[in-house]
Image 1 (tube, one colour):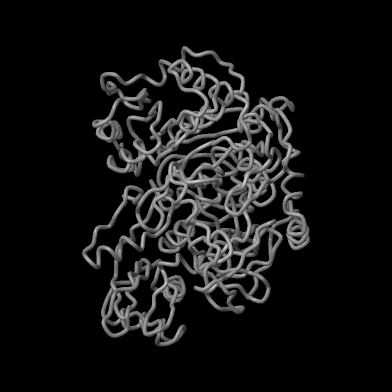
Image 2 (cartoon, helix red, strand yellow; image 1 turned 90 degrees about the vertical axis):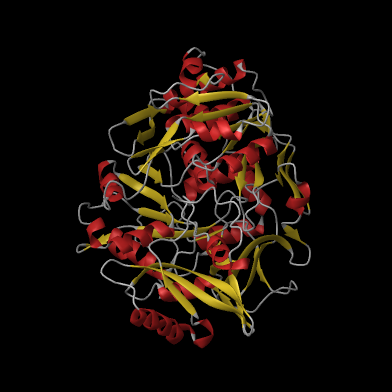
Length: 617
C-alpha cells in the first residue's frame, strides 16, 4: 500500500517533473547547479566522459571550504549557527557560528602547513565524532591536502594497512573516544599501527590527562599558536578531496577517491533538495560518523554547503537510556535527521518506552539508508515516531547510495508517494538498469543486478593506487557501473534493493534474496531484527540459515523456532523457508548500522572473517 507524504511545503514539489527534465539534459542539469556555487575560475567543459573515465567542470578551480564556509560569511551569515556538538553524557555542549568554524579550520590548516603538509599530501585522521575531527577534515580541504578519515576504533592492523596505502604526511588522532559511558583508549592502537614504518608527523588531541607518547605533537598546542586566517588553496575541479576506505564485500579495503568539484556540486544539491537543509530550515542531525561516507557528505560537507545548522553527538543512540535520542530531538528542536534502518529496528525492539518521554513534534523528516528499509521499520517511523493520537506530522524518506557514490542514487523525495519496501526512483540524471547475468534487462518484477548506465559528478574517480580495481567496477557486458546490489523494479519505476549480490542464496535452482527472507521474518510480532545467510548443502547447493533477535517479552524456544519458519513458508513459499534458525542477542554490525552477513557466514563455516575493524563492539 502506498503511503502519502505528510510533509508541508517540500523543496521539490514535483519530483516526477524534475527527474524527467534532468534525464533529458543530465550535463546541463549539473552545470546549472554548479553555477550556484563559488568558483575561482570557470570550467571550459561541463563534462568529459569516455567510458569509465569521467571528469566534470573541466578546467574550473574552486575549494570545498569556499563553498562550505566563505560564501555564507560573505553573504552576511557569519554569526549564524553552524554546529552544536554534545558529548555522550550531555555535560559538554559546544556551539559554533560559521565565522567561528572558519577560524578553527584556518588555524588547523596553518598548523598543518607549518609541519610541511601541502597540496596533494595525504593526512590520516583517527578521531571520534568531535568538532576537531570535522574541522581538521575541512582544514585539509582548505590546504589542498587529501584527508583519509578512518573510523576511530578500527583495529591496529587495519589502520596500519590504510596508512601504508596512502602514505600520509601526517597522522592526527584523539587519545580516546567515549561509548556507552566508557572511555575507549586510542593512542596504543595508533602507536602499534605506526610501529614498523618511518614516522610521519603524529599529532595527538588529548581528551584525558595522560601524556602523549614521545615524539607526538600536541594538537591544541600547535593549533593555538597558528594564525586565524588562511586563504583557501585553488583546487582543480578534479583534484582529490578525500580518500575513504571501505571494506566492501570481500573484506579487502579499497581507497575510494572523491574530488573537489563534482563532489560538492552533487552533495550541495542533495543537501538542499532531497534532505531539505538550509539556513532557514531548522536543525539537522545525522546519526552517522565522520568515518563513513554519510558522515563525510552529510556531517562534514553537506550541512555547511547548504548553510544549515547541524547537531552532532558522540556516543550510542540508546545510551544512557532507550529514549535518549528522542529526548535530544526535543531538546535541540531537531527538524530533520538521518538514521540507519537498523536504528529504527532497535527502537522497535525497545518497545513503546523509548518514545514515552518525548513529543518529537519538531521532527518533520527522517531519512534512512545503509540497509534496506523494511516495511515494518518504515511503518514504525511514520506511525509511532512521527505520529501520535492527534495525527501525523512528518515524512520518512528512503534512499540508497554507496561509499563510491557520495549521495543518493535511488530515493523517495519527501513529496513522493512512498512504497514500503522500495527505496524509490532513480534520482535526477541517474539512469539505471536491472540486468541479468548476461547483461540483458530483466522483466518488471524480476531480480537482477543494479547497474548505473552513465557516470555522475558525485561518484568516485578511481581507487587510490589501484586503477585496475576501479575499472573492475564497470562492465561492458552489463552496461555500466555495477553497484553489486540485487534489485527489482516495479511497473511505476520504483526500485527495491534486496541486498548485495553475494547476499543472494541459490537453493535448489531458486535465487532467493536474503532481504526477502529477512523482511518476512520481521513481520512476525516476536522478531526485532534478523540476518539471513546461505550455507553450502550437498543436495540443494545452499540452504537458508536465519539469525533472529527477539523483541522484549519473547523467549527463544523450539516452538517459536518452528512458528517463525512456518511464518516465512506461508509468506514466501517453501523455497524460502529457513532450514536452520538460531536466536541471537545481537547481530554483527558496523557502527553505520550495516549487518555484516559475511562475518556470520565465515563463523558458521569456520573461515577467516576478514577485516572486521569496523564492527560494532
